[in-house]
Length: 100
Image (cartoon, rainbow, N blue to C red; front, side, top):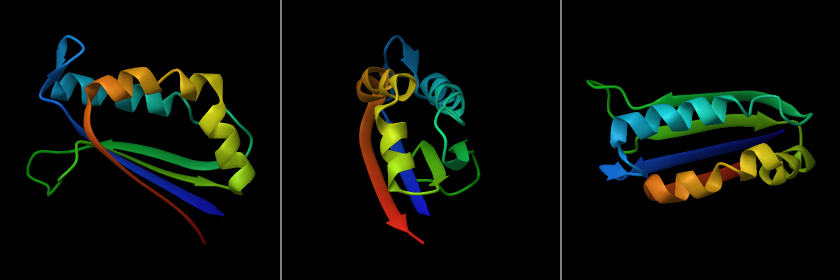
């Protein structure tokens, strides 16, 4: 199994919206990718909550059956279509994939 974790720190204002609005949009777009390829075992998206510690604004936690499933997800047209928006609104991005 492969775990795929990505965190985004967002710009204060981008693409005509504030940070909170863009974070909610990212969450909706990512959640719509759940199940787009065989082998997605789990996909969770969270937005930083006031009162809880967070150094990033949005986090994706996902599990894939194997690297082939993760690779298929990465190039799926629905997932690839998100990248221009995410690139425009993010200040920073961190990612880690690992096998368990």
